[in-house]
Image (cartoon, rainbow, N blue to C red; front, side, top):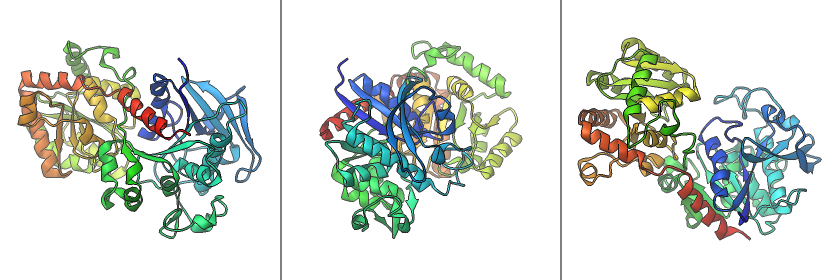
Length: 480
């Protein structure tokens, strides 16, 4: 297929190489999705220790002699189906621990994260402007979250050279804060340190820098894009989003439907033949030693208040009294891990628990469960509910962000019209969540209707096809 355009995607994470959240899934899925439209995307990542060990023999396509304390070079290669550019700067990235700190979880960030990810952005902007030594030059620079936020700024302040830029907000909660005194060290122009540009409440934010200098802003769902103009969602950046409203859009994420496919599971099934799902349910119950007469729900999530996990101890006892059961897979706040453990202790045979994460187990949970609970207080997009739709594991979601964009609640009108795909509730609190679980139990008891909603959920297109087409249109609108 003829190449119609080139994109340099810059991020700190990418499946299957490094992942702490949904950002990695999106960055890893986009290249293949765009290739179907004739667009060539390369992904630029930091040279973390595990990645460096896999780059032997790769071609050097860029060299930087002074990169915040040492040399840096960009290596080009193909790995696990993705065309990669790796910023090999050992003094910045060759460290034990997670991508942002000595521990992979939240907190304990590296002291020099502003410089580490400024380096990633600096080199990305240079390659965008000049092209690599192998002759590859992008038409568009696509930057993801705060870690790549300085890249559009470096490109804008140093000369765009006909390259358009896109800044995608995956989660505005993380804003890349840095002290104002670091302005010179971060190679940013002093004349742009004012509220209309780089200054952010007296300091710096790499995310704000990207938002005020890029050509287009996207959020990972239409509802999240709309939410960001309000203080409770914009978290200090709502004014920037409002000021740039004409270039803001929401592009819903998709899922890899080859990886997440009920037809590809060890006991396969489909919307046309759900028999395999009943077998998977029985196997799952045996694995977790639970016996659930009503709907078997799962939670596959980071255990945080943002994900609404703190609501579960208050609603699950009533759900169990109605015949339901729950299996939880995840880790996170110790307080919430203990609360999940208490649920398992208090309801043996009805609540199963596994602290941690296991990809294979996640697949077994979606293949065998009846419903997946996603009671997030905010959710930029969310992939969990899409996995639920794909597997006929009906999502029970709070009506926020991408959850509201992807799940049609099973109210009487939607059931009558034949469009319901799950259950959505609002606000995100105990009474509304409890009512949603009662609706789930009642729907499960109506087996013919339950099967119809399952089949309709499985018929939803949650692939990247439609979203990739929207990105292509966006790229074509800003290319030089």
